Length: 431
Image 1 (cartoon, rainbow, N blue to C red):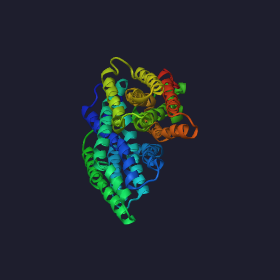
Image 2 (cartoon, rainbow, N blue to C red; image 1 turned 60 degrees about the horizontal axis):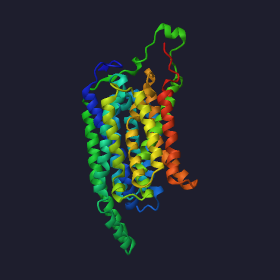
Image 3 (cartoon, one colour; image 1 turned 120 degrees about the vertical axis):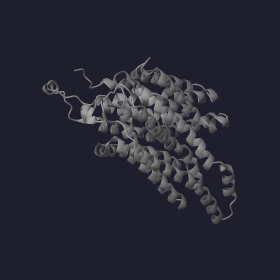
Image 4 (cartoon, rainbow, N blue to C red; image 1 turned 90 degrees about the vertical axis):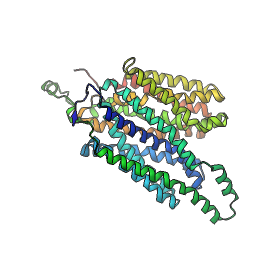
């Protein structure tokens, strides 16, 4: 069933399924936070840098798989694209089993990359679908709704997997240190890795079951090729778009997504390292990421209420970026718990960035929306690259960790502010 570009009412069933899919995205994404310390322990990795390849493998998949995902969506459609993405996620979950059995870190990274590939396809399909399934003016509101589920999963995943994988990490570490021979040590690590089996088999079953359910569920199918009006006047004036490169606001939007995800990962993943540098209470360190994600939930609630009734998505983007810059400056020029709290509060500032940027980036693309969405999704690689930039500034340029945080965050927010004020209008001319 095809629907118009901006139907008067949003399909509630479609939104409910989008919420479930965003929950899955959030769970897999933020599970990496638990996998990093777990794999470092169970695989006896020597450095944090080795463990950080978990996050890198996940986010870098978006860069390499987004455009192929666009091609797949052109061939099979949005609905089938969602189904295939879930099957790929299930396959990635199953690869965890032989990786655990053989204690093979490259195979673990392969599994994470495969899941990242599935998420790239899912993101490439679901974001434009969510933007277009209702009025484009309220797209940020719909993204706030699904974002609430995404970050709820982000809070649940570390707690659940942390309980399953790291419930007695201190005792395991003590046993490893007390092991008198290699065989004993290997047995301890093999026993630890067996904890991967049950949850990842369960996830694989869940993903494939949901894919089957989705396959036989009717959803509104948006005909992207019919979304770009063409008339003789357009042809005569030469305003008919023939190439994706004729939409400069798309590429500016992709860079905005790069910095958006960079800011999210910096506030959500770096906060633990930042807190240790600040010597804050262990309670804050244990639940560091949860604090940031809770802030994002509050921001999503505000977005659901305010957009577009009280503020436009462009205004929301401007408000959030300015708030992010203010909170960053306060966190850098304070110390201890106060500084830590303002890093966590960046979750509120970051909450509506994606929801506002993505619809603005793909607005007016018409039949190029699938490809444009893929280009936007490539920007997620910011989550893989920007923490390394922060680490380089801090560790290799001799910059104090708080000042390095400032140098990393302010340019990101400043660029997104530019996009919210002017960048999203570049190349968009009124008829």
